[in-house]
Length: 450
Image 1: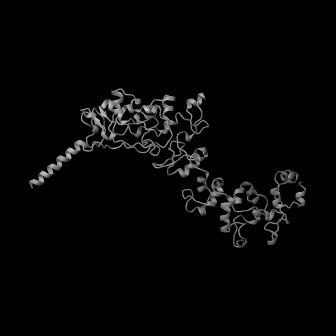
Image 2: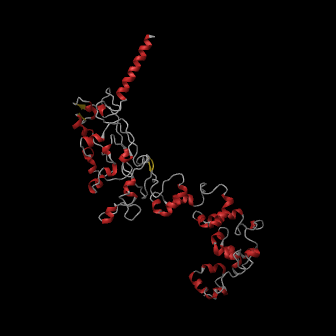
Image 3: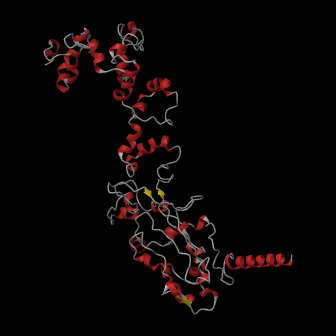
């Protein structure tokens, strides 16, 4: 029993020791170096362009990082008076976003009394804790002095030239990175937001990619639009697929957030600026849904086959934004046997869609007559009829409607308005094709117009 009590006491002491060594938020007497994990950054300290609950910069453009370090920017900048260039001086000459702007370990040696010239044998002559490896490196194990957790900062998926912004435009670091001097450990949350970039860069214009000040003075050359900062494919489209995920436009940009209801909203975005969509998509991407072969169930309800006739008569332009009457509507109506131009075998049992013949064709001209309906909405007619259907009645007997072999010659019913004979010559000279639909070239009626 005594042995078990001693063993339990030993385990408790070891647990407390491990927790004291590895679980403390900072070294004792570190002057407030900061916790091991950065606390959420207040909105006022984040970069310009950030907004509440924006969840940081794009994880696709700026992939997740690993920073197993203790560092206090506030102490170094505000208390010790160190400028950004003291550690990040490479920003003044950097021309690529892939450049590493983190300070080398040797930059710390002057103040911390360490020697990082040989990373396999780091040494120190500083007896205080600020010179010990565990002062800055989280999880440092004295039993393995040459091993620390690696800092991992993947290169961003964009183009950026620090030199042009810092030296050329003389922009302060806070313009893109926020109030770093008020933070302990600055994380990827201090990386730029696109909303801040577009306060200087003109988007969607011929001078896109230029700063607004440069546009006003005319001193800068255009540098492109989206491709100014974003990576592109060989065909000129923006690269959207990365190992870190798929890049999509943010909701605030032209209301183009690709969320659950974008399938309904995208027509507004595309109609407002189709060039914006063309930055990422080719026309064949749109055709994949808009050719009429694929029916998105988010657009049409399940019973739309029975309802579509009403919808088509109410708003035909909306239908033709996706469907072609002569290739989509007509072929389906032919298969269903509701068209006059369908298979002849269907004629007997086809039934009648239009009003009675005495009103639709034989009666006096009225709003219920087919001539008025054709003039009012020809799109509705061509969804079921082909040109030969009209020629059955309006063509001359020599041309015929369904062809002489079927014994159905044209009836020669004149479709022209009163007084047309006086101006038929002009119509013939402008476009003879409609005339030859009903007349032969030797037709005496046609020769009168030549």
